[in-house]
Picture 1 (cartoon, protein in one colour):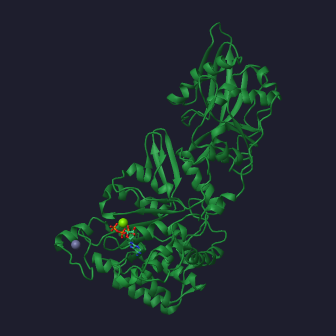
Picture 2 (picture 1 turned 45 degrees about the vertical axis):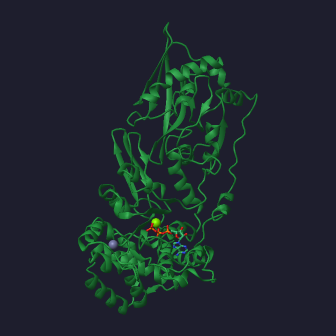
Picture 3 (picture 1 turned 90 degrees about the horizontal axis):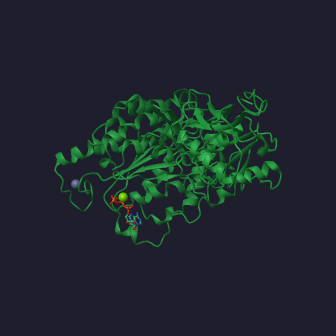
Length: 535
Ligand SMILES: Nc1ncnc2c1ncn2[C@@H]1O[C@H](COP(=O)(O)OP(=O)(O)OP(=O)(O)O)[C@@H](O)[C@H]1O
Ligand SMILES: [Mg+2]
Ligand SMILES: [Zn+2]
């Protein structure tokens, strides 16, 4: 038991009929904490209920819902003036999840038939007639309960499938408060829900768009294959209709399948935002998020009064695709810079701070100029050099610096289109990507990032890990030095180039990075020079 938990922190429970303790949870981002809901009564001719312990408006209104639900279901509450304290008092309690535990904390002991609640956590909103209404965040709440040593999690039936994905805790679905009382009274026990195992993963690649549908573009495909193996950020540049959007949208299917832990972590983010698909509550596919370029910074990185995760977190363990990259608001893009480095984002509000993970692969697409045809073999570009320059300059240097791989998606030849030869399937590409990734993972065994997540891909390596794992041959070091000078790389650009070279070497299962691997990595980011005249 880490803290709170079944044996600790409930000194007064049931010693007198007027003090009862029930456990619930509060979330900060996807991190849950145990909240103790304790009541005390004072004899008074008028029946009153006061809630203390930094409640927000929704929690304060709980008193009215709880009283109405009890009246409707004929449940006896403790008499007199009741005070319910939500502890610890220094964290803000938000939302409607405390309705159920508050009701239980002030229920007349007889109704619970002496049931032991000390190993259970309760969450759920009540309707005025005592039905349980769904809440958001049930999955991270159940995970927090399990981590704190609790054995049972009681929640609204609609959230139960989602919560049942949490390991090491029994999840009890409730439709109404009566279900709970019949359960504790022994009249009609509620059965805990069994999670349907890892069957969710089998559907990961069903009915997916396939790489084989993309004709030509062999160089671009190879570049994306490397990007996928190391989770490197990539920029696709090319004229309209050459296949940029097609390539990007197929990326999730050449990535290795989500592991159970990755699925659990990403699903918690959707759970907090109330976006869980109840039929498939645990994500089975790597997320692919493609927000429109009019997106605000709050929607991109997270924010709002009741802090919500943003697109960068919904893309956690998957792909964030920014199509028409230069059209995005520069301010919004700038807010992404820090999270891109840290792989997590912390949002501060008066109500407290929330941290969400955001390890994702950033993929951007753009035309080379406003008309789209600069560099096209047959169609002339109609843009003035100034227009072209101002278009490209919308992409800030610091952001470009964070893009490891630049991919030219050129205009297709007629022969590319008019061919009977089928291109390689996603499955075949995925097999190579998976093999390279496995080679990296064996090296990363037991390695963690500063944010506490395990190290799962080359792009996520932190400086010390780059130092340890990027072993260069002498010739490779010489070539890297030349590239550094010639491309005018920043220190960050240098590290990123090294990580890409590491991934190229992983495809050959080579522990040492050779000059050939470095040469490939250099080639993969050479468009800077062609289009941007920088780096
Ligand atoms: N390489 C390709 N192989 C097969 N079909 C292609 C290819 N490229 C484009 N197409 C066809 O053209 C359509 C548009 O492609 P896509 O949206 O990927 O282009 P794009 O490069 O993103 O263009 P834009 O710059 O206008 O966004 C596709 O739906 C597909 O039908
Ligand atoms: Mg497109
Ligand atoms: Zn042009």
